[in-house]
Length: 289
Image 1: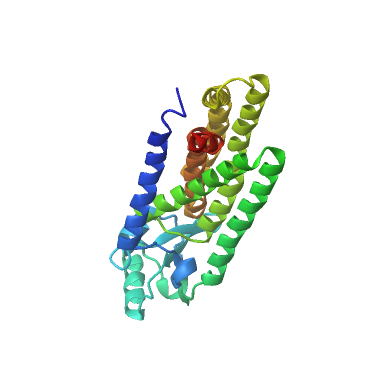
Image 2: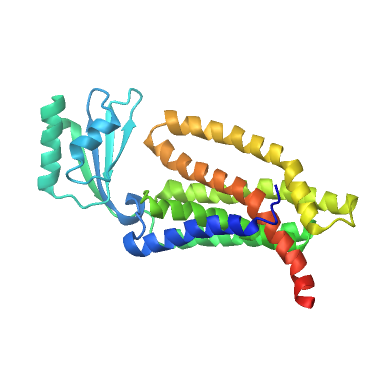
């Protein structure tokens, strides 16, 4: 497979997802969770295990986007979060539904609180600042270890992974909360690993075959690193996927962006970062002609 020759296809795939994400942002905005917007938290000691799907079906008329998690060792406690400021009438109606269907004494076993946003503009700005500082530090390190063109390609690929993950969340209106921010910061550290491995292989190929064209060097390096990259990604994804399938909703909220970031990171390490380096390396030669 000629990675360099087909680079426009790979770039267009990523660009298409980002453009759709931008369009959907202006149409629907970002689905910020209760951590950013504030809202209502309802805690119910049900005395029995109630599946999440049943709870959501029961409260969907009040807020179809409510999140539900189980608490307690026996998972008999329900924690329902809504980004809406539910009125006392609505809260009473929810209590009546649970009392009627599950025979719960809601007067003694149901509590509700109105919460303000725990993560405001300052937290979001600090998260963006953290990504920016990490990117600059990685650029300096990769420039020192390899060269500036490697570093620039790696950072663009890294930002690609973050933007793809954010775009998917916007497109599918997935809730963005504190766990999402933590996952994005994790992706920043994880995604750079496979890129460095492929760049290291490119550097070795350049030393072993100094007369070979940059295009052949990139294609050969990706080919020799492909199995390792895919095996590493599959191993990690399987572990995270198990957590997503078997974990409670709070765990799923964290693992979903991790899964998206890992897939995007593998894609960018194979198809985006090496072709960007090839472009930067050959740009001056083309312009000189």
